[in-house]
Length: 64
Image (cartoon, rainbow, N blue to C red):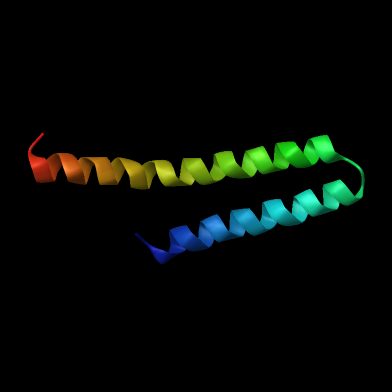
């Protein structure tokens, strides 16, 4: 795993957190929920490549 992936995930988390706090303080709780959901989706999309590589490594190791 690369350090840049961890930094990307941390960056998305911090950005989503700041946006949620701003939206909640302005009374837009529904949009804050959408920002949180969007942040989770972006992180999952970042992890798909790593999960795929892990599955391929396991398949290759066991000869599946």
